[in-house]
Length: 168
Length: 219
Image (cartoon, rainbow over all chains, first blue to last red; front, side, top):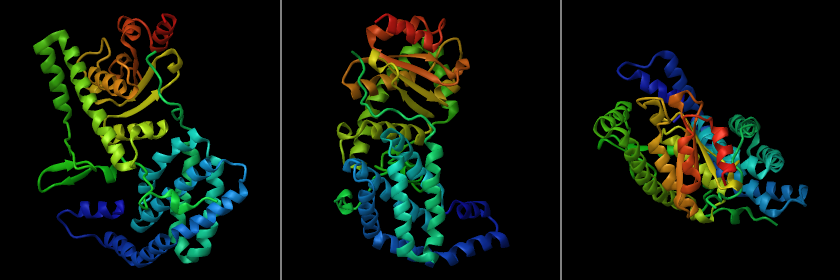
């Protein structure tokens, strides 16, 4: 659940909600039909959207090993699914907990930042075409958060890819 | 030509198995907290950790360090088994087949979600046969009774058995710095017992880097 609304419910405990709290709740509930529609579109067209982006990516980076491209595409799918859920419940924290903390080290270790950035550009372009302006308006803040937060997290050192080999 | 649908397994893209909102679940009617697999979680009050330290010190004196270390080894042995089961179940892949970065990332997130602080593996000395583990915000350092020597014996035990099972080698662990003594983090050195044991005598005299240098020179 959206943390702001959850906090409102928790704070209310044994009193009625204040007008501004009801306003927040009302604003969110009114946006739910549009959020559900956007979520359903993403779910239904995910493969088509990502396949288009994958084809373009492969055409733009023909020398990049397929293994690297596939890794970034899987990461892109995870990013998109987390953004879809975060958009549905209107909670950016979900992207941080389920995507960013997970993918930041991987991106550093595999050096996939350039591929990821290229893929995100293609993906956003296709999402705009398929979803339209109104639905993208709901999804875009989540995409921006997921895609732009990564470079700042990359400054943190990450463990090396090599396996652990100690004790000799 | 890359087929996106072929990249999905059962239409899933596993991410962070230990994401806090999804990993910790509860059945409040029954008074239970559970993890993703339905294993029970319990919250440990800080006073209980203090009481364990104080009780052991009173009853066993200096032996309390060995008791805690052995408790940690027991804990670590079972933790490794459970951790691997959880990874296999969530990622649909045995840990041995996982990229090491994914395994380490999962371990770090697992540590965080249980409130054990933050863990990182430093492989600087890997080619000399030592692995350094760093832990920040350890509850076991915070509630240590005295601060004349490192006190995270439980964690040293956990790391010993966890990493022994992971590497298939019989490793030993010595803590070289401790938050309870004002260090910014807890450093643990792991390696073969005969090579890492000399560090035990150095911890009160040398800093971590000097200990590592001496250990490497001795090999």
